[in-house]
Amino acid sequence: MGNAAGKREKVLRLRQEECDIDIDALGHFSFGIAPDHEVQHYMPPQFPIIPRLTKDRVQTCMRTWELVQSASTEKMKQYGKPGIVLFYDEFFYRLFERDTTMALVFPNTKQRGEVLIKALTFILGVRADAPADVENVKNSCRFLGHRHRTFMKVRPHHFATYAMTLVEVVMYWLGDMASHDVGQAWSNTTGFILRYLLEPYLFSRTDPYELYQNTTIAAVREITESTAQGLASAMDKSGRASRSSEHK
Ligand code: HEM
Image (cartoon, rainbow, N blue to C red; front, side):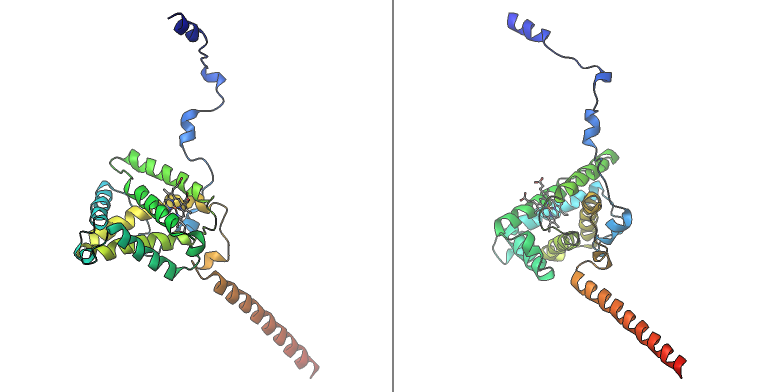
């Protein structure tokens, strides 16, 4: 008792004017975000231009993911393997076929599986019951995007391929159950998350060369440089031609 009373005396109470930070404000993403046109550029072209997050869509994603995870669709049953194994194999097969640089980000199989589970858990964990929930999702996506800035070898163009392949493989394994509404639900939910994840990820990080296209950076560089050279030599030739005609 005496001890508790002694402790109480030591409690330090800060008055508002003595605090130089507002703790609540730290929960809001307050770092830089990229302009809309850059974010739009790195969104998968197959996704809705303005993805909308709704309660129904989130529930559809959760319901259909359950079917994939338990391998209970007609298409999956025939393989007799766990749903997550079939999903993982198809997903990474398509991902590496599309972009070989993904292998630099995910050199080991265990880590790439863990990241995929983390991404799916994040997507399926969002809530959109009320407008305030949707605002909270935007905020957590921005923090998540900010965190992706620290992951080695991840490049802006990876996000579109990754997100698009993820939705595509869900639809593939759903087979007959992959209706238009299910596609809408997955591409809007994943698209919404991606949109707000890209905002901080892309902040002050885009390469003007890369902005021309999503993946073929080397080819763009080659075209740009050869066009510049072509122009220079054409100008050079026309300069020479006009000079020689002046002499005649
Ligand atoms: C819809 C898109 C994505 C979502 C929702 C997502 C989600 C997540 C989540 C929740 C984590 C865990 C974060 C933490 O530990 O604090 C994570 C980690 C990570 N993500 Fe993503 N991610 C996405 C796209 C990508 C892409 C496109 C790449 C690269 C190609 C990527 C690479 C990584 C890596 C390397 C990690 C770190 C894993 C580790 O801790 O070792 N993510 N992601």
